Amino acid sequence: MDKVNYKPRFKLKSKNPLPLSEIVAKMRPEDAPFIKKQLERSLYEYYRRFGIQPFSLQYNSILRDYVLVADSTIGLVDCTFFEIEIEPKIPGLSIGKCLQMAHRCQFSSLVHHSNTIIEEQLSDALHLEGVEYFAIAYLSAINDVITEGLLRISSSFDGPDPDLRGTLLPVEHVARGGFPLEPYTRRTTETLNLPVNRTLKTALQKCQRYSRNEKIQRLATNALTSFTEVQNKASTEEPIYEFESSLPREDYKRAINLAQLILQGFDPLRGEDSSFLPYYVINLDELFERFIAYELKRLIKRDSYQVHLQKGYEHPTDPKLLNKEIKPDIVVEPTEQSNRIVLDTKNKYSSINTDSFPDVANNDLYQITYYAISLNAKGVLLVYPASGENWTKYPLKSSESEEAYQKKRLKRTAEIHKDLKSSFKVIISQNQEVTIYLWRVKLDGTMEETRKSIAELAHFILDLLRGEI
Image (cartoon, rainbow, N blue to C red; front, side, top):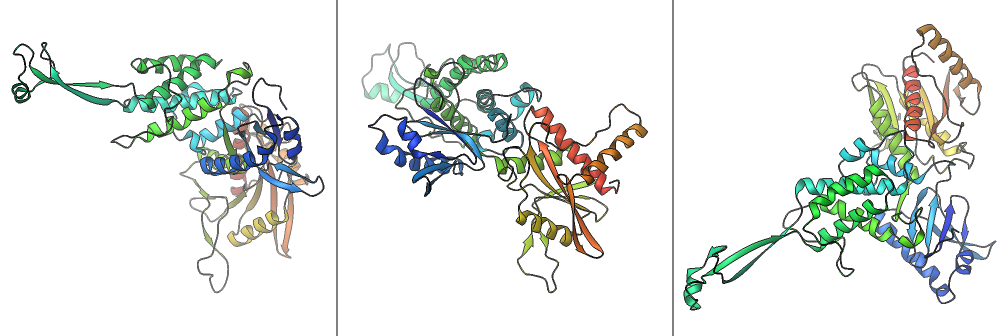
């Protein structure tokens, strides 16, 4: 548990259950009876907000205690009296990196906003912290709001006005017996000082004040110039994520969702390093699957090859099965040939060991083999996340000669086929076999390193399709 000045924070990692008694022991005696109930309430609330259960609460008969168990999620969960920080089980994989990946492939509801600011301001070579991700994500959402125009409210006032401002109301003036030099007029005014705008401004000020990134500070300062007519502080009684508008404003909804996370997750008592980390939850199984698919579609030329995600194919049965399909995670095939490569990326974060080596499940072997037979695939790959030097390497051509590159490539191909941790054959019949490749993508380090690792995977897939492996 971290030493903090406010809420205790307990760390939870996949396959390392956290006993409920350990939490209770660190709490105030008067709070202890409410701990289990609060955990259950938090589980429901996070499922409602994020569509995912951050951890499960199970009874362990050996420990004779309830335990918190995490599987494929990461995040920071608010449990009122304390916090649960769910850490990635891959060494060196930062929470900020996961959030950056989620943004890039438009995975999370937290990042459904304009890409412009993020893509321009973030370098793939940077190690991104969670606070920086949320701040820049929020600034992107605010940019959308400013572009569309801040919400404002109009109000009118009828009364005598010697300066004749507004619309003259002669009938009203006569009816009320008004003084001739003070005719009745209707004056209309507009204001930006709405509760929702005060909330957005307060979140912007948090980004400006507590981020250590100069670009974030500069962007927040520029954005605040659009809020000069808005008061500085939102009332604690004002709703921060509900508002009414005569026009649909999805940009406001996105901005308010992020503002809510920033304002609720902010705690200045923690100190500089951990004071600013909003509450959130992300499923890394789904994120890894989505990110691999997104990058492969980006890397592989669409005019020569097609990348299909969850495409349905008929079972190779006679007679045909009605309303039954197989849906591989990813299928890559040339546009003018029938060769195919099948990739399985589902639930692979959950199935790796703590040393980042894959624990290949029997069900995965059965499924990928059946896919290979059904689709007459030229090769199949089980794709896993990895860290350190455990990732699969495949050479990309640089400034070397073609002869030197081919020599290096053939050497690496031979190594992959000899290494049982990289490939093996499944014998289907005397005349048919399937080679299954276990491919490990580097998930730790910078985004630049991860994208290079996926580029090597894409190059390997194309070489397989061309019959060069």
